[in-house]
Length: 254
View 1: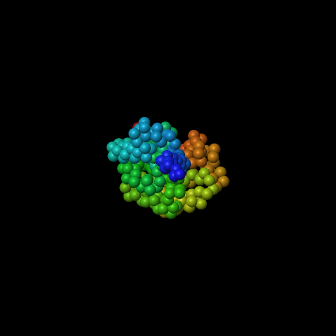
View 2: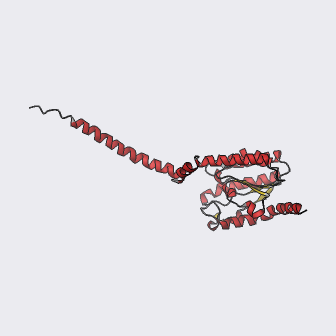
View 3: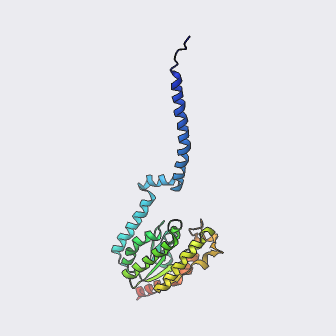
């Protein structure tokens, strides 16, 4: 006797096949989604977007636009400009040295990003410019490209604001030994630039190094500085900055 055809069999086969494929897809996609979210700062990425309507990168662009607009209308005579990335951005320069010292640090910038902002820095006609870029170049740009970018930054500043005194600061000691050779190469290139262009060279390494790496007690994560780290930095460069602010204050008195 021929057994009747059971229509449920292929349906069950299809159901379990799709179910199995769904589990497999989830097993692959969920970790990938988690990694994507982790690389963007976790849930704070979505919280920021929901509150601000923009991604963190848009916030950086807004900061650049704000600095650009301010540079076009700035009327303070010969300010001192702190030009750098997040290390500079997190400093309380005006509070430490007075309103004549302008903070022009932006989080996450490389030397390549800095090149686009040089005209705005020059437009301020600064008496002094303190430059610190490079930590964000590691793993993104070869050391020789970083040095070449710094050369172009210096050259453009010299052309567009020839009376500004330029101070090149060394990159801080690295957080780990694997970055030491790259950091040393770049700092060596920076120092040669300072000598070639007759600029001021400020080597920060002696104040922050513990052996070949940075003193962890002066940082919060191996890269960004703690309040104690900023105290060391501002006292290390203070004589270079305060000479200018003292002259400005004397002019205001008279």
